[in-house]
Amino acid sequence: MDYAGDYGEVNIAEATPPSFRAAQGSYRSGKLQVTISAGPCSDGMSDLTYRQTVRVTADGRTVSGCGGGTIAANTLAGTSWSVVAVNGRPAPGGADYYVQFSDRALSAKFGCNGMGGQYRLNGDHLSVGNLEQTLIGCPEPSATFEREAGVLLRSNIRIEKIGGDRLRLVSEAGTIELKRAI
Image 1 (cartoon, rainbow, N blue to C red):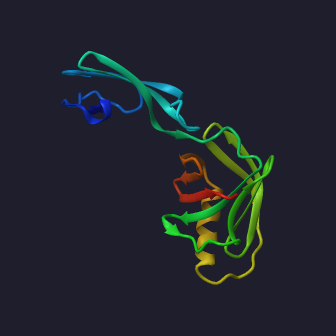
Image 2: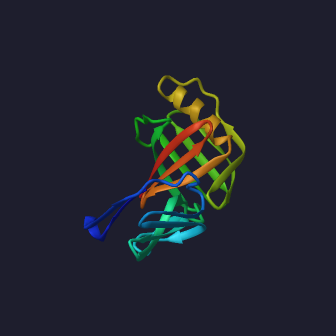
Image 3: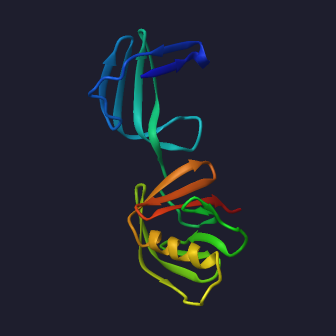
């Protein structure tokens, strides 16, 4: 376990205990004790909410913070997003690459066809039901973006907030990276 504190003034490296699990628990090794607790945590400096609270005691001094990745905001209603990438491939951008959320409906376009359905948000999990899409034959790269995004939107999706204006939709089918549209 490596600890850097006081803006880099304090550095402590200790062996990671064999029982260490990043999900939750208390761990001690030499001069470090780490306690990871499940539950939402706000860092107080941004609008981000994290999955875990982390407390570290380093050489007798205790500090607290957040960890475990971020949780998406509790609502997506009324937001519009530009598609940045699908499965790591940058989207061409422009008005034909977007995802929008109304009170209960999602609408999206990944280059050519429109798609939409009812969505439900449960914490950081998003489910889209009855996803429908128009079936115009599309040229590349739109055809590939639409096919891959459609598979992802029909799967079990986790939302990761990756900055004040960015979201990542993640599932076993891949990823869609979005940037908040003004």
